Amino acid sequence: MRLMAFQHQGQAALGLRLGAELVNLTALGFPSTLDALLRAGPEAMAAAHTAGQKARHRIPLASVQYLPPVANPAKAIAVGLNYKDHAAEGNFQPPTYPVLFHRYPSSWVGHGQALVRPKVSEQFDYEGEMVVVIGKAGRYIDKAHALDHVAGYSIFNDGSLRDYQFKSTQWMMGKNFDASGSFGPEFVSADELSPGATGLKLQTRLNGQVVQTTSTSDMIFDVATLVSVCSEPFALEPGDLIISGTPAGVGFVRKPPLFMKKGDVCEVEIEGLGILSNPVVDEA
Picture 1: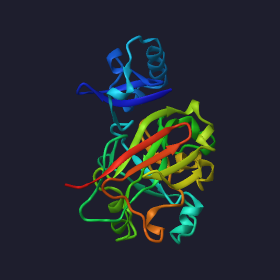
Picture 2: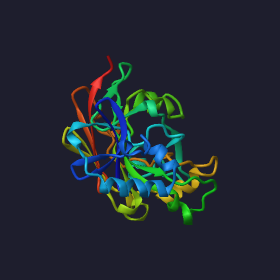
Picture 3: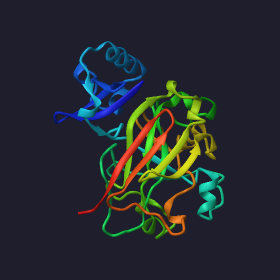
Picture 4: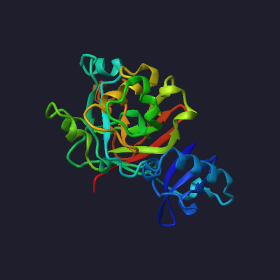
């Protein structure tokens, strides 16, 4: 099942994507956000899928504006240094415990919307990542059952302002400038992918140039481990996000460095999840 948050004729809604068309689930009486549908439980998700398949009225994808798949997650937990090659390129030791930080919804935009390079920095870096979307609440989740709590997956560009990220040992400032990251284009349910979304090719392209390539199987901490660890300090809730980390190839370690600038287009593609594409603009 592929669900999209979108705006059409001035209204935000949730849709079921069927090829190049979209069924407006909100118009059929379902919630207007994926967050709310996930909170309603698996029966509501199944009902939405069935209703969408039967619906006759469909909207061309080309006529809608994409919104981030999850509107307002209670928690969006990002993972640093989760690929050995990325840790090595930054002169970090591979972590023995996940490096976690928070990313706020104000810091990301949807597919097709502009990433904004803030006027206080010229070190605007890309980071292609897979997003884990929680569907079932839980605390102290055992790793053996962690995947039961995953509703599905999406794509993230963890746009980073490197000079601000490295002003201190905490990464929050460099990771949370308004509209510096992106999320989308859609939510793909876990049953459409391998368990834990392993073995998926991830590739980031800047203006068509391949800058990152990896497999999700190369993560140091797999999806089940991340869900289990993140559930220790607080209960995970439906709609929470785990942004699972980026591979090698980021711009700040290149010689010369490669940063995003006005006029660029950054794409993150993950096998089975689609392509997240965003132009880059300067802050006004």
